[in-house]
Length: 115
Length: 116
Image 1 (cartoon, rainbow over the protein chains, first blue to last red):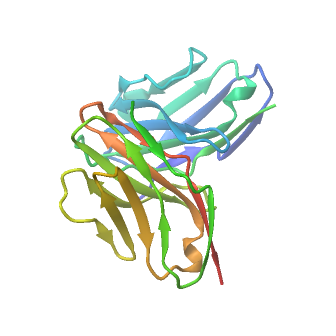
Image 2 (spheres, each protein chain N blue to C red):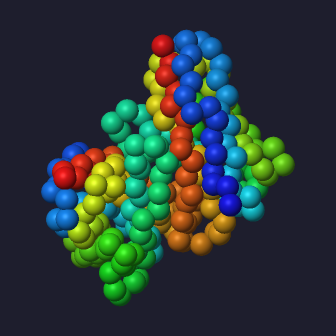
């Protein structure tokens, strides 16, 4: 069974450009999460999809970030325009259930560097 | 506010020794879950172990055990008989049902290095 896959693994862009990150969750997982880790700091929640609906987007830093989940399958996270402080590792995770035991399956992350 | 604190940014341990990674948490919710994840150099986050706040016994998964001390709000990860492959970043995390079932908050991580 394929795990959570993220593309690209690395992205280097200049300030002001646009970048789109993609996440393919495990097949059948309704829950999809985006997290971000800025260098040396804790991993922070960005948002949560249940199927195609945004369940919780309270962690999105500002309106330069736009997340979508087409048809409840893969998800994209677009940053437009990118700023220096957006640099970090963006993780995607998926899970099957809605219970308290949210065993999240993570992707390998996308390392974003904004120059 | 909920918070996870990992006070050890890095640790060095001799192979085959046991190691304890510290984690303290703060929450006012009565029902919550505690997790540990491992992040090897390849980048992915690997689920290791889970402890529910109402669980009477400490969770164990193979060489991993969670030393849960509810009154002290600590959830330390114990790795017995460490191996070279245990070298990685380790993150403690918490989910709280009443605050939000959809969020898991993470600590800043501990980098564990196993010496041969």
